[in-house]
Structure formats: structure tokens, C-alpha cells
Length: 346
Image: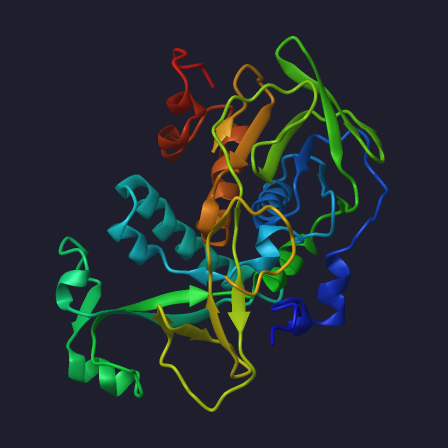
């Protein structure tokens, strides 16, 4: 039997839950210096970074509640090192930097962001199951050592241990970041974009018109709005997470592909990839400037790494808007790689 109950929201305080529905359906700032469209972790982190950098007034709008999309259903694991087995080096470098930024937020943000340090253990039937080029940060484990760390496995396995990775309750982190924002409008969807002279001049929303000095689209999928042309490949992927009841089993960290232990003893298992299913129902069987616009930016397509990459994404966009020039680390993620157009001056 599957109970469709929240994984993360039921662990929040009343104050944190209240942050998720701030400013419902009402815009308090019609002419912000910067408008952020999208209230997932990337949008909230970016809005918070822009506000903290003193770049002027910031308004964040979200069609639902903050974190109501992929952020609220993510596992919250911050494990940059494992991406060395699957992703290009520029991405891995950014992911490592982003974990460092998560650590800085935990130390400096009011109340912290709920960062929990943990070790990552990956299991494989034989040592050849892992790529040999992994950095020395990995400790290779034989069958006996894995059995000591993770007793009760159905069959002996070798493994790899990476220390000092982390996890968060993504809704707690989002709520605490959002707490500094003076202007938030949930239940407010962007509907269309008006441009003039290569700049966004107006965003029409369900709560009225907004006239921003600059705009950041942090909508997960590339925004599909009247008046905004974006030719980017994109598709939706649905996933499931499973959380058990509290168990006496104790894991030494997150054990892939077994589970991650939460602070209340429950085991978090997931997630799946359900292609072609865009419904919200649970199935039991189972970073660039907008081309052609001088004052619009886009962060999209983080796939399973949105939580991990949120701080570095926020820092990159904030530096870009502040300096008027793209930071070097943004070059690898330009939308130009999807087109045949010559490189646009940012």
C-alpha cells in the first residue's frame, strides 16, 4: 500500500511552512529592479543572492506555492563527486563549488539552511563497476569492508566511499532562503512577455503587470510564454521517491542504490524516471542570458541536480547581472550550443 504523503513538508516548522505560501495572488512591487520568475530552489536562491548583493529591489513570483514543483519532490542529496563518473569536468567543478557554497550558507545564513553532512557509499557487484579515473577522494572498499559498514546485504559487494558529501530538506532550505525576500507573490503565474529594443519591458501575470528592470527565468523547463521565443530542446521527466516508516536499521550514510537515512529513522529510496508521464499522480508500478534580450536571463534544465547546483547558479547569475558580463564558468552552458547562430555578445 502506498500513502501519498509529503516527504519534506511534514518536517517543517509552522514558520517554514508559512514561507511557502507568501503573498498569495498579490503583487506588492510592480516595478522591481529585478523580477525572478519561478519559486523552486534555483529561483529562490537566485532571488536571495540578488537581494543580498544589494542589486536593487527584487520580486519573486511563483505560479503555485514555493517549492511545489520538482524541488519539493527531490531527494535533496548534494553529492558532486559521483558526477565524475557521468558528467563533463566543467559541470563537476561547478558542482564541487556549489557544495562549498552550501556549506558557507549553513554557516552564515540566519538559522542556517539545514545542511547535513554525510558520507556516500556506492555499491557494485565488482570493483570494475566504477570508473578508474575517479579522483583520490574515493576510498575503495572490498567486500568485507562493505559488509561491516552495511550489514545485511543480500549478496557480497565491493564499493566506493566518498566522505563529506551532504543532503538537505529542500523545502527547509528554500523556506529559510526565502525568508529574507521582501517581495514574494505565490499563486502568480507569468502569462506573456513584452519586449522593446532588445529588452523585456513588461511581464503580464495573473495578478497584474510587472515592469522589471531585469528578469531571471528560473522555471525548470524553459518558459513557454507569449512574446518570448526560446528554441531549446526540453522534455519532462517524472520521478518517484519512496520513504519507509521509521526503522531500526542504521545506515552509515547514503548507500547507493539502497537508501538514504533521514533524521527520524525513515529510509528514503529513489528516484525513478517515468518518461511520457506528465501527470502529478503517484504510480505505484513504477545558465544563460536569453538570446536577443539584454536584460533577461535563464536558468533551466538542471535535471536531477537542481538542489545541488542552486547556490552556484544563483552566484553566477548575480555576478553576471552585477558586472554586465558573463562569468567564465557560464560559458560552457550557453544556449548557443543548441543553435547554429554565431555567438551573441552577452
